Image 1 (tube, rainbow, N blue to C red):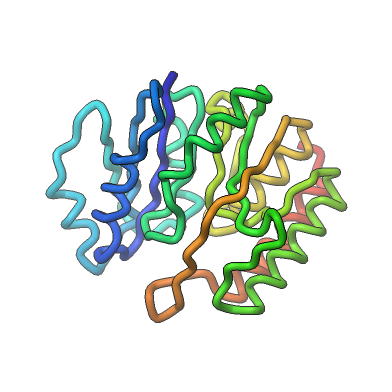
Image 2 (cartoon, rainbow, N blue to C red; image 1 turned 45 degrees about the vertical axis):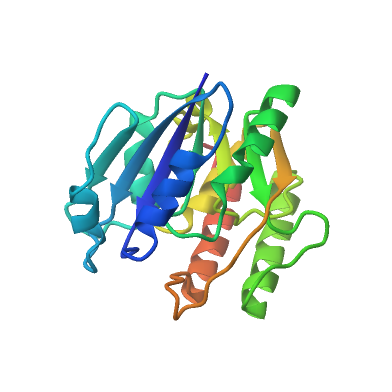
Length: 231
């Protein structure tokens, strides 16, 4: 079996290589691993770092012609995924690929279509900014209410989805709102979804965190849009 790893990168010159090394070092047992990095037209040197890497069967790098948003970068990678499952991994160090075996084990044991790495399962709250925590709690509650799901962390960036399902969802969002569109459509279409607890090491805005309050408003709009629409 094979796991496809999607990494969307934008201005991550200090973390892109350590993050890639973590991904490469992640021990997922008998699973093969392919890595697809999409650079979202970085301007801080990330693009040049990636251009210096050798691509092979295990690593493919795609360079966007302009800044098109994280969601667009993920959607750009999806058609290139050939694994049984695909997982989204940020190009920073907030999430640890060493925990992927937990997601794979649950997916196989319960024949799940998607497994999320939850930052809050078990009552944990590893956040720097209080408003981020409560914003995610509210958006998770609303998603569960409208789509009949049981998420504990709808905004986690650690999402693993069966590749055939991921490629069928007709995702359209271009920014961080893709996290919510993906969750909405998995729930709305009745796919089997599970969660496992993961560690989370949040970074500050000064350290490069890019999510802003407007992203929360956009997420709210996407949740309501997908609830109303019939597709």
